[in-house]
Length: 148
Ligand SMILES: [Zn+2]
Ligand SMILES: [Zn+2]
Image (tube, rainbow, N blue to C red):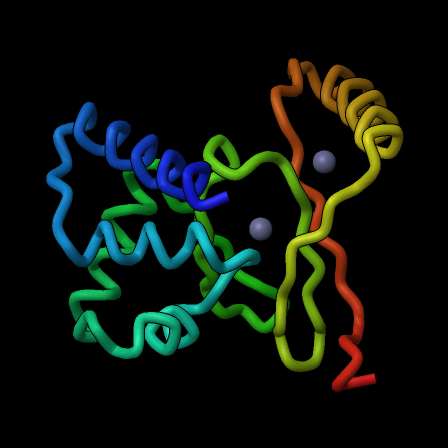
């Protein structure tokens, strides 16, 4: 498991190097921590995970650099807050479920069978719009166990 985690971070750093982006200690730390924290996290949550090891202004810049260079994905949850996680090409395809009241978000996996059905549907819907579909995102909303 830890060898696999190390290789995920190595892959991400290799990608950055090839894009001409320097690996700084802060960037490496963020990649390492996020590779161990499943699910997308807000900057505040990442700050807590890092135990404030990276000053907040530098953390925001780090998250922005890593996102714009394709190793992190950024999206806005149901509460409109930006959340970050390692890009799917590093971690594998999955979906998210967000609590529409508190915004807490976790990863969920669909069965292989469900993915096949979604892909077939997406291909058809995309084709009718004149697109060849290359991927999909499907986020679920609900009420978490705390808010229900
Ligand atoms: Zn995720
Ligand atoms: Zn899917």
